[in-house]
Figure (cartoon, rainbow, N blue to C red):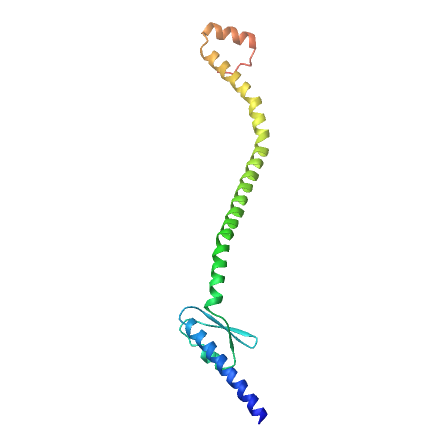
Length: 155
């Protein structure tokens, strides 16, 4: 009989716990997702599903509305820094890419710029000679031809 009394007391405590969990489950099914653990498996009961079916199978409720709110607050707290870090990384990549492209362009264009600096005075001299030859009188042209001793082209 003593064994029966112990089993009855354990059963009474179990029923009390089931009623307590049932009260929690009934209040959370309308507001949040409930996490249920059955052995090693975790499953979710979506809003509107009744968690007592899971409790009858020997499962226990892990998280309900009380566990979701701190998680949501933590998620909100971590959201903007994560976004900011991604934008900072993208901005750093863009700036480094621009610096790399600009410096490589300057390195490649430097010899061409030096060549242009040496050719510019020659071109200006050529333009000056051309302008002077176009404004010469026929007598000045004959005198220039005699001094230069250019090879004559047969006409």
